[in-house]
Length: 114
Length: 112
Picture 1 (tube, each protein chain N blue to C red):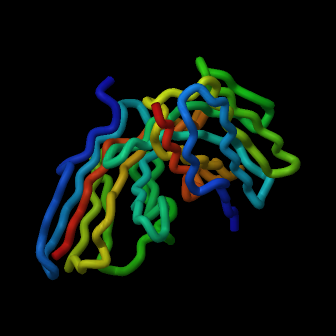
Picture 2 (picture 1 turned 90 degrees about the vertical axis):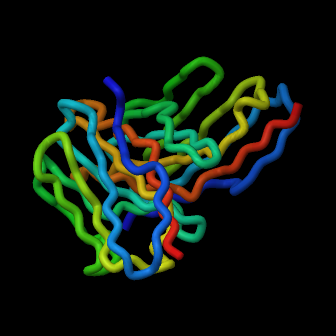
């Protein structure tokens, strides 16, 4: 398996623009997570899905953030409109609800909002 | 709310030293604990996963221990090498949830 795939790897945009981050989880995994990493706050969970259904979005900072999972192999995280304080690395992770419940992380998307 | 603390925040050692990284958590009702490695500008690589019923896990020069009752875990790295330089993150999977709570990490530098 190729692991968790994220695109783009880097995104530079201007304030006010819409940004869409994409994630393909590991095949067969039933959980998908979106995290954000900043120097100040470390790694924070934004939202997670189970079987394509959003379970907990309490970590989503504002209404400007939205996430979807239309099928088991694809998820998006959208920021509209983007602001400079959204600059961070966004990670997607997936796991299978089995004995180990081990999460596997993608390479991340480095977002810079100017 | 679960909180995870890692000490020290940064560590610099000469090559060949054995070292210990510490992780503590406030809620002992955890399902498992994972240690990750993160290289600069890269993603997270899982190093070791310890189930709540286990005491330790070993992989090569790495050994992770878990004392759930005291809310502590340690990552022991034997005979450190410059290639071990990275940030090491501890994360706990909370019982009843699927969410990981991360520490802020320990930045390790091993000098030749």
